[in-house]
Length: 277
Image (tube, rainbow, N blue to C red; front, side):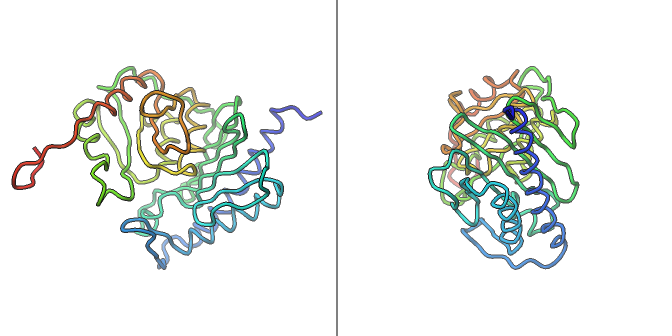
């Protein structure tokens, strides 16, 4: 009888093969002119997103024909009522890719009724492969990952991002950045949520927060953080919900301090001329 650990290892291998298929498509298109479409004011999609997604789905559907698949561009497909489903972002960081900024990834995760099962975040250009399976730890190119030991917010390097409706929605995270930048070592905004979470798992970042994310943005990276010894939660320190889109992730040691600071950020005040005070 196959053990649960062995089942998860095989499932992780499938996710890795799927991510590699998507990454191959992205590498082939890297540096070439991209045909760009707008899903919103600042939300882009390229033909590479669509082609990479097709490559990922082809591998997953062949290996797991009885599962549900939810991907950023293709939407929901597969066998309704299945016990396992997959979250797929074929190109997390499309804006970076379209501008020639080499910071983007393929992100794939599986989930069942008990939570996240496996997660893979693969950087096509650097070929850094972050992988995790429930209860089996997290790795980077096969080497074990562990979160940082930074004990408090004032020494922390953080990451965040901004929602796609930031031009029209006043709750656009700018006030949180203004609040946190005075309380930590520094803040980075590189434009790929899956990589922000993977870097927390690797110990390169101490914490991360963001709002209005999609499940495919969060799933793989959240599992990486947990399996590397970190912590994830909602802003209110409750359990992280992929559906809520609100995430705080950290090395665990400074998690509550970070979450409290995120929630405590006051609205920005504007002077008569429109300058931020």
